[in-house]
Structures are given as structure tokens and as C-alpha cells.
Amino acid sequence: MGRLLAAVEALKAEKKGPTARDDAAWRALFTLDQLKSFWWPSPEEREAWNRFWFSTPLPKRHSPEMPLPPWDFASMIDAILEGEYELVGIRNLDATECLLQFDPEAYPFGGTGSLQALIRAFGFEVLGVDDGTGYKAGDFRPPLWSAI
Image 1 (cartoon, helix red, strand yellow):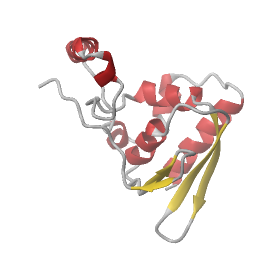
Image 2: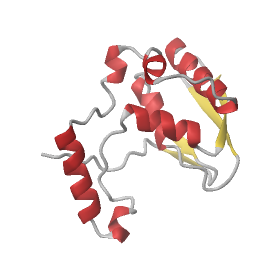
Image 3: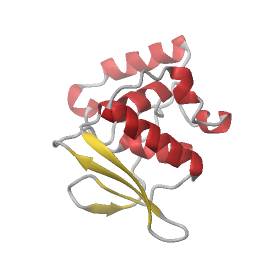
């Protein structure tokens, strides 16, 4: 839990006022195993994804059924930093569960996908989400895209 807490606090501080962290500084908050949970596409994989994305009709592209690749590390960091919400922090609910709290500044505020990816990267399970429309139990992941 300590590493997740440190990452949340670093992201929280960066959202309040840029500290000019570079990619290496963000990566240092994660172990190599944690970094493996992200998508690190080769140029060929990125090209295959772009072909798939742009060949998908617009209504399907923006639907919940649209398969997506896993989050890549830089996109997750950027989405959290650019999300229109304040990171409040992590609150323990009991000995086995905690809550990652955020305060939306607008709606839509950017969604919770990047926050969920952050939680999963540290080996934790997402038990439910409240994106401002009410609590929904479960782990919400889009279908996974694969170039294969």
C-alpha cells in the first residue's frame, strides 16, 4: 500500500503545481513488476492499434463495447494529471479495503479509467466505482484489444 500511497501523493502534488517530474521520476515510483502491467507498444503494435481505431465506425469507437488496449504508462500519468478533479488521497475503510478519493471539478471530468489502472498496477483490485453518478459495484474494464 505504501507505494500506491506515494504515487497518489506525488500525482496530487503535481496536479496542484507542476514540479517538472520527468518520465524517469514517475517510473521510479513503480517497481519493474508494476510497470509490466502497462502497455509498452512497439511501433508495429502502435500502428496496428491506429489502423483498428481509425477503421472502426465512430458510433462503435465511442461505445462501451469497443475493445481497448491496456493503459500505457505515459497516458495513464497524463490522464490523471489532466483530469478535471482534485486527488484527495487514500482513506482506509477497514483492514482490507481502502478508498481512492477524488473531487470532480466538472462533469465529465475525464473518467476513472486512469485511476483504476493506477490501482491495479500496484496489485490491488477495484471493487467498485463512484464517478459522480452513484456507486456501482464491480471492476469496470473495457474489452481488451489485441493485435493478434
